[in-house]
Length: 150
Image (cartoon, rainbow, N blue to C red; front, side, top):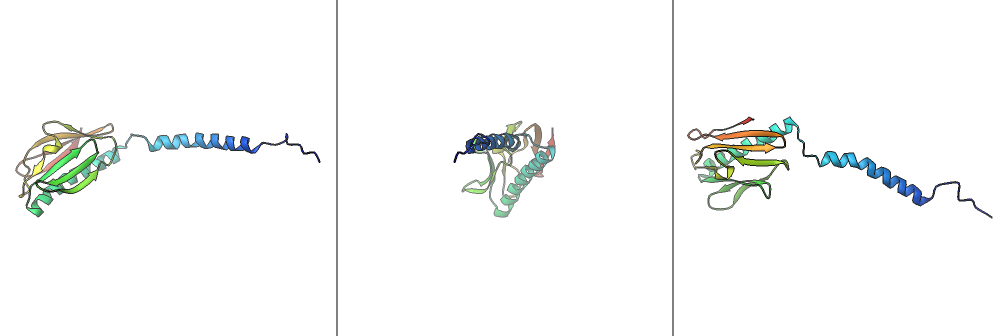
């Protein structure tokens, strides 16, 4: 018996075609997942969360009757609430890879709250999230923290 193998595709040809097609289909998916673009709503939510973390630090100082410091680590991309003596109270990873804290009149690492809840320093710093920029202001006396989009 003689077989004619020239009329169809080989297994190697089919596998190669499927591999190329799957790679071509995955390119748009991986680009959208690794994108550093962020919607204005996502940026606003992250900005609000940073404000809430600052207010949480103030409440922790009051509740524990201790000084509480803010630490922002750009290298490890972490936001920390720490006691003056002792360890971390809370460590929060940055919510977006493009977050960058910048000094205006103060840097977030210089912010601390006294046991009565009043901030030890006042001033402003900025937060850049992709193309969006927010300014945070810490006020003395009232201990108020405000932010606005720039």
